[in-house]
Length: 225
Image (cartoon, rainbow, N blue to C red):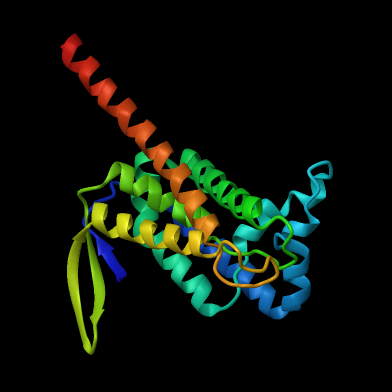
């Protein structure tokens, strides 16, 4: 299922979402033009190189979020950010949205690091941060409709699926894949499923806290009124 659009309207232009997409695109261009391996080696997160007593080894927990492995990697991540990011930015405002994006990205990297601490394979991608935005979206807009491209054998069609089912199914797949990765070699490359899971869970918690606060303010307003 590939998302095409969502039914939740935004009241303002998503400046930070667009800026993040542009920033990721610029960094990917630099990766391609300044020496891919050298760039990745310097800014990606290599778990086995992390030393929590040395700040310079911790910076990749942030910088790796702006790197991508290939065109499909960056296009898919940025497309998901475009579809779901504008609503989260609209809800929280640009500054808090950026903080949530970075926070969930770091949380996702920490989750992947926890399970793959001995790996010498560089970790890179915005997936953890984007997953955090998906988690917040599920908490805040569970009844929103996601227009999705679906392939059923040889049939390709477009259907509308509630965010609750779409993102719930997406998270379930990540969790099953993450559990399935247990026992694999720490130096085996692949998808950072635990980064997806960690980012999503933190984003969902942030979204739930924000939704609960909004409900409380509404009820207090009713009582005062």
